[in-house]
Image (cartoon, rainbow, N blue to C red; front, side, top):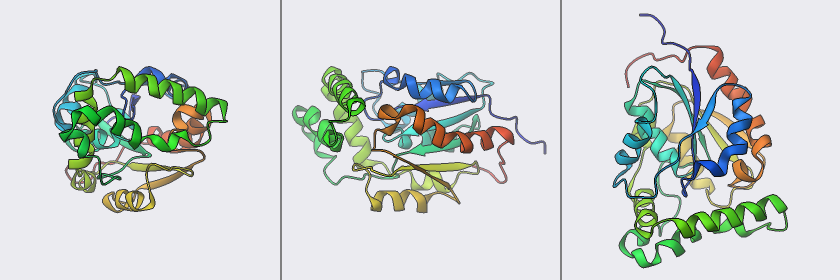
Length: 244
């Protein structure tokens, strides 16, 4: 059986707010290695994790072979997508989790009036270190993004975080998987990191300096930390021994 074609592009999936434009500097840095683009999510309900997968998958050309780079919330989307779609050649999970890293996320699904508060609370560790100009700018951009999000969309994403577990999806993958941990991540704790690593088959581990939002506050440095892993994915066609 012939080997599958090499990847043709890097596709980045953003974190909880889903705004692709806020990650432009990071995606531009990735584009220095291979064609890269970001896929954002619409500010309307997509109903389920599979709904997010269907939306993202519809943005990929039929002949494309993509390396998914997924941030935080989007790790759930990327894991399910990769488990279903042979166009996905490799997976990089950045500050991600296999199941909920916080015990209270479900409250937002049942109390939509608190959704924006809880969405901000999920991301609140970003408030530390605001004396750093880049973090201050990102904090303002994130706050604006959360204010613009519909409450039912925030509630929906919190419900997905609370209810979904993609461990089985990850365990069944036969494509290369790498996990990027941020050294100063105050959102994703040690337990969630361990769960994610245990769910994957022999994942590559990349240490990235910076906070949970290093992709936004240290875009060039974060991209540089990932480039060796991405270069290896593009150098050799991804192995797909066995089935998904």
